Image (cartoon, rainbow, N blue to C red; front, side, top):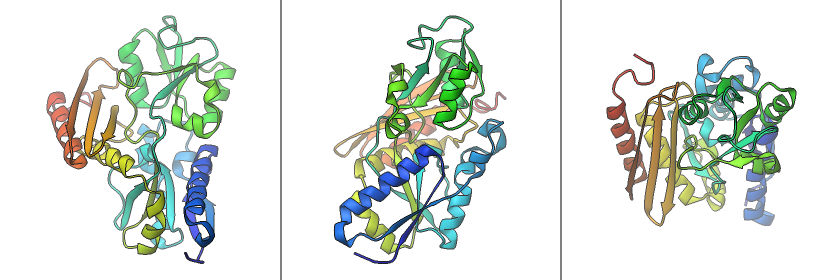
Length: 306
């Protein structure tokens, strides 16, 4: 197709690199002998460097994307590969998140060296997580458990279990699968009672809006049903003004032209929750409607405690 190399930006964690390599491999398979060279460029982000505080205290999701997006804007990068759940709903001017690989399993995994499930944990046992969503749902389901902050990549979080920092943790099934470590999952949590983060399990490819060459390159590996689901989920999140500071869960399924979206919002302590469902053939409208309805149910100050 073209000889000019494609520079692909990514974080440097093992999971991020696995995702970047999956995108590269799919491009090479789709274009065959006409495929361009794909150069993977690893970039350290603020979210990777700051490990001693929850993201909700230091800036939210954008900490995993700002440096990479600066490379896209400047032209130093051609595409960026992200975990879609890390992406803010508002992107920098001139950039778009318009291409997705087929979504992996969006559920969360329960991981413990001591217990077989969240339900089996005794009162006072400790769950380690840095996710406000996971913490809030755990508190909703098991208010008798303790929760401690728990950041780091998958390997770090597994090591902390061995070190006894926590009795259990929660990890995305998709990430474990991509790392070949699904064997560590003690239990897979039900997606209805423990819905995922918006975008969980979906690899998103960010690019410049006006880069037709890149859009043509990505077209053969783009998965339209995943894009529809993510359009609904991200519109829902945008309506709720969601970030890492708010416990919000949402998951959309696509059947033909129909999108079905389930959303759950909680106070950080898990004591108050509102959930709902919307369906339709316009993903953005579906997400916006559900977000608006839950925002009305929650009322002002729901997330801030005001």
